[in-house]
Length: 340
Image (cartoon, rainbow, N blue to C red):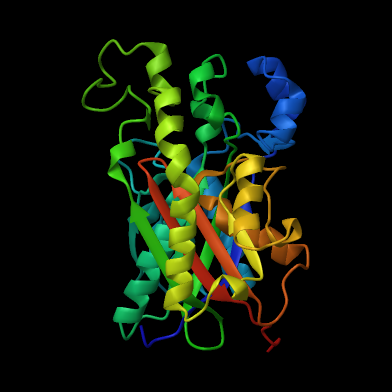
């Protein structure tokens, strides 16, 4: 791509509700120490009745627009790339956002790649901005309420007990003045397509039929089989997409300054950093938020920016994986933007 597409600004939103590690231990029977150390969770945000996907996504989008100092009428493209568990079935969150923020001339649609959706959506937005000469700005939003899809009595789905609620929004812009996106990559291994799903509510078990209550929650078909097949390939696939994105940028692992990964078990997070020759303080770990589906990498970067971690010229890596299974990565260079 010859046109420079960059990260302009972002915003995030969380519900007020919190679930502490101790509370999760009581609900699940898993020792609190295991939840803190192995699961890597101190607390997470959980939405209430008022915290619909539409509300969280809109709040994040409005904050991003305000921070970017961009009028909604300037937005050319809106992509919702978060959880498909939204306000309604067969409903476009992208179209809702277009109307709610007043971006009347923006094309709007939804992209679904589960927990890799944020970075897949970023890749789509980057390509579409680059290929439309008259377009200048895209709004990308990922939100999740999947904490509501957890059955804490189902130990087969325990690796998902870290799921939390929230949203992140990112504005991408055309021009060299923004934090440039240098490379992206994504790969899918469809052999995992049947491992994690909500069985009820689709065409196989339609919502108007007698659907067992447990089939309305996220389920793992066979945890042992999933682990045996996923463990050998998970780290290599993370590294593959990072290397491919770095390669597009003409960079290598030694150039990475920070990594903002999807929330994963603490040992895997540490192994990923170690393999990339990064220190623990060079990777943002969402231990106080949990796994907010496709929003994770964006949240990590936004929180790190807020905490004053980022400096001019740093190379930042964002990486995610979503059941199905899809791995995705993006590389960008941070640059200090002068106030104007």
